[in-house]
Amino acid sequence: MKFLSVHRTFLILAGILLIFLFYGNSSPLVDQDEAAYAGFSRTMMETRDYLSMEFPYSTPHRKPPLHFWITSSFFQIFGASEWVLRLFPALCILGTSLLTYHLTNVIYGSRTALYAFSILSFSLYFPLNGKIALVDSLLVFFGMLGYVSLYHWIQSNKTRFVLLFWLSVSFGLLVKGPPILIFLGGTCVLLLSISRIRSQIWKLNPFFWLPLSLLPLLVWGYLSWQKDEGELIRWMLDWYVYRRATNPVFGQSGPPGTYLLLFVITLFPWTRIYLSFLHENAWKLFALLKTNGFSMIQHFLPWNWKEMDYTFTAKRFLLIGLGFSWIFYECLASKLPSYPLSAYPILSILLADQLARKHNQIYMYRIYLTVALVMVTIISLVLLPKFSELRMDTKKAAAVVQTIVPEGETLYSLGAHGIPSFAYYYHRKIQEVSTTELPKTKGYFLVSESDFLIWKGLGMEWESLGEPISIYAYDRNKKLNLRLVKTNSP
Image (cartoon, rainbow, N blue to C red; front, top):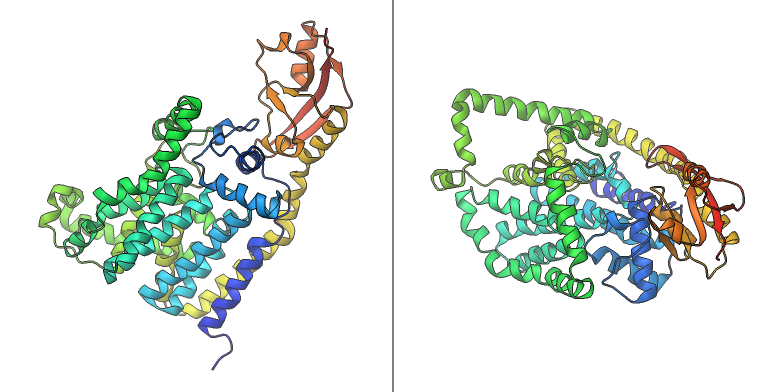
């Protein structure tokens, strides 16, 4: 028996993934999303107010509260630190990889499961989500848990998988709202086109379980509405539903096909298998169009499903899963890399099957895996430490400002230079002011160099404190030159 059997190789790779996910996670916060989430969670821990989401510069990053509740609980138990902040997201990415291995093992066997685990866990983009504390790692875990439960329900008819499916939906709703319904709900709708399992899908009893799954989100929404008269809920509906369906957010947009091309990069070094998968299925689609013409569109119309005689196969289940984890987001105006995150586990299984059906599969797998492990090593030992150095700017700036501004004083902020990680490390009261409020406000201000010169020219009596502060805002790819100033109280 060879030492590097399939199971031993899997255990070794799982150990490497574990080290990668938890190594170096004490680095400074990633600006914007991660820092904002850390701020919400720490504020909840300190104030014991688990309904409000208040933190400087962080209004656009508010979400349903489960991620913040979990993180604040971890802060309470282990202390507030960057490593603790990233602990649960790292566990969720690890859990998603293990669920992917499990589902592939059930469908195709252990060797293909090893391939799927390797493709998902050692590609360029997906594992990095375990090293940044974003809500997407929780969402993809609950999405995959529900997806695996759905497959087991179809195959085994055991009630525990129905409960697990709807529990995944409920938790997913508390993490990010509609995306879990888009993925799992959309998948179930498409599965109704397969006559052999149609009754099985209806036995999920959505008219009973869906309202029950929505209940925790609705209770939180009701309590939040009572607290702030609906300000947060109305903002979330506008920002996360209406705007993202019709307009790009944060200026990130793209035409249909954006993610199709993005996967070429994010699945590196397994890109060749991805292109092979696209090539094979494109020819199948071309053959269908050549045979049936555009009349095949009728197959997608729900009122024609009763006449269709599709058979249920694992491959069809996986391809249907891509419909609302990937294709749906190609149609949105807004394009963010995290939107199709739930497609990565499914794509990994399909690519693993693609690799397993090719000649010289073991030889090619070893080449791809070697490149992947070298890439992971370079990312861990070279690129992430370099990126960590860039993130030190706001931490140093916060320490400098703390030494100048008295502890009990409010730091006022003017302009669009706000960085959530600065607010997190400053850890004192910050208040954003508008240009109309500025002349009436006295105290300590953090302003941009350009605003300082403009307002000084307009007669604002500001006293400059210390040297100008330079921060590299890597999320905007530019240097921010800030100045701490003071206006004396009358």
